[in-house]
Image 1 (cartoon, rainbow, N blue to C red):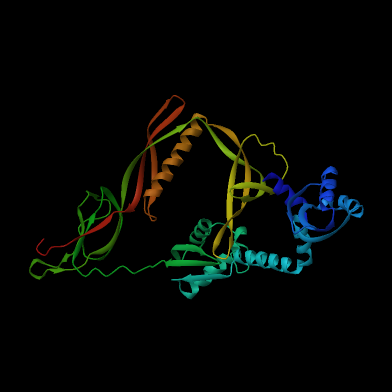
Image 2 (image 1 turned 135 degrees about the vertical axis):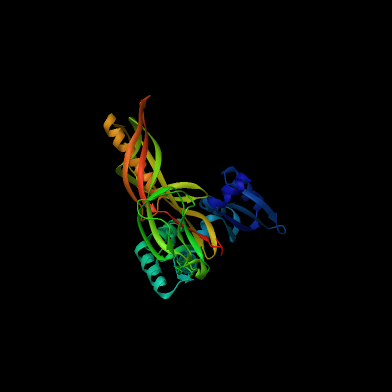
Length: 395
């Protein structure tokens, strides 16, 4: 088997020998280290055999000294395939160009479909896609991944609640769910306005209903603030109580912060490397050169190449090596207290409605132990304390 492969790469020829003394010619070939095989006899004065292409020059002097004539009747091996390919290079290059062209076209964006969006919203989506780089004629492996496109569209376009992004072949499909701002349905059934928590009334505006409290009154949770029953006992009417009532409420927050903290930050230095992955084996094609980063994080982006609708075992991978460093932050006791207050305010604001206001704050307890500062903070907040309950006639 090994000799067959060697014979294939070096090339071999089939020779037909005619004449007298062909056995003597064979013996002379063996004595001159000419390798022959598959010897076949055709009658008494002719036979054929194979020999290496490189030995053709050696056999010519032997033939001249004999009474035989030779004829080349067959050719095998790599050199003849190359020669034949050169003669048919037009077909080879044409076929190669065809497959390369199909491969290139299979990895480009040829369609963008947006479903479920109004014309105005679709225009905003396509405009944002152009800014991202998602356009017809762009290479898919140079674009960001589907998850990143979905995240950027959701964050940058306020008119949409959710958008699904899917890449099928050479077309991006976008399924859009737009935000709907339905008007609050009119409450036709009678109801009371009650307090949803303990508070001191600071401001109130009653649109409809009978107020049962005034500014500066202290109210308990569940207490009726505005009644839906109006009029005298003999002529009582039941309406839908409406209004806004703000009160002073109270919150407590426990915050712990370390005086010394270590954390990692990016320095802004980075290096980009480009790879071609063949059967998951990366081969670097760009971005050579050593880096002296002591600490770094690697961000990888991979895009597979396609041929028509099939994924090839070839992918383009981009690696960004970002340098980071460890930084120590140290607070004084006063700075730690201020930082803890800011954390407490931020956490409380995330729980409150947008129209709520933090009126004041006070540190009830402060402890410093094991390098940590713990605060118990008391907040006064002005917020809307209104909730509603159905009114049962006769209440």
